[in-house]
Image (cartoon, rainbow, N blue to C red):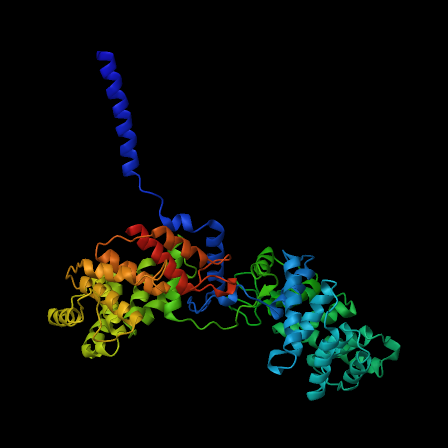
Length: 567
């Protein structure tokens, strides 16, 4: 009997131990199951590409995936110089074909057709051994543009690539227009026009006045080489071209030019046409690779990595704008998203400086909260944040007419963020002002549990008024709880979500604030999955194309997932 009792208690103890482990083990957060490594890596990579190298701020991310014909031309030709090809040539070919179709479709709209882009397209067709599907249309567009302006190298090269019968005449007319002058610009034109004539089928002996022009170009080159001290980027590029085309063997000059080109290299391996830049561009990087190759130099692996980083998963290459004008909202959300993904923030000190400057001058409480939250994530001390935010908060309180709530329900949202920031930073607000706000908000409550029928009869506005009111009351420490309000909020749910991502986030914040249960979580998660873009970020609706990814939508989704976990 004793053995049976011992065995029973042993089994019971085992069951209780397993149960205890189960009860004490938190389930894996939804956000961790939702964010896969590939998606995370794309999001982080695109944020790095979209960052302004000067301020560390962000403005948007859409351009970090969309290929451009300009960038594809420079990226492909730079790789070719290094005996490399795009990672996915087939996708690049598809991009080129789609681009040609768009040119054809937009031929009657001059604003949609750029002859330079047609030239880039034709060069790339040549590199990938493709034949234009709409060659006659492209030729017509080039001729039309040439008639409306003046013949140029771009026109001539495009006609040559299209095997146009006009190519020889246009190339010769450009050569005949060449004015002899003692400058590197003349040397460049000489090289370009000579190449056009040779590609058009002329021999050197058939080129009028060739010996005189060649001798002048050689004299200019020799003079420039002797006087060379610290050549600019483009001067070094022209001289490198001349050395290659004329097969000049001057190792001392080559070494000097290589040293000059390397001065324009940026920390990420790219090249700029200005010394000391944080980030270069794909065109100047292409030209630098060209010059280095012609001079017999070695292109660094970091430059190859830079070129690879500009390849779009959609095919082709992306073009990062020469100037990115950041804004505090996108900057703040970018920092918060990176932290959600357990990633470091590039150029962290610059980001801190930018956001602290903005926080100290910010007028809008929602933006103030984003700036504060991002700076908190970056480890800025609480006292420093308080010192920057408190004067702005007090100024907002002093200048705000609370009766405006009846005309502008978004003022409730502003008050919520002001209170949220104040409470987290320990900023004491005048109790009388708090009491006035509380009384005003409570006066908006309706018999059905909602708020705001005195303001509006529009369903969306009334729902938002209700959500903001609940959040304001509980930030004031009122401890608002009302089952009718909970039921009102739940009744406004439209399918899986509350209409839009921002409204859904506020609904979950309000329900959590009310201590209410969130129903149909799986349905909500499944709906959010549709907003997930394949190459990073979320969109505000179903992600129908990768370009629709948005940093603010991404923040909203990650916040919603966090709130589901909290509930």
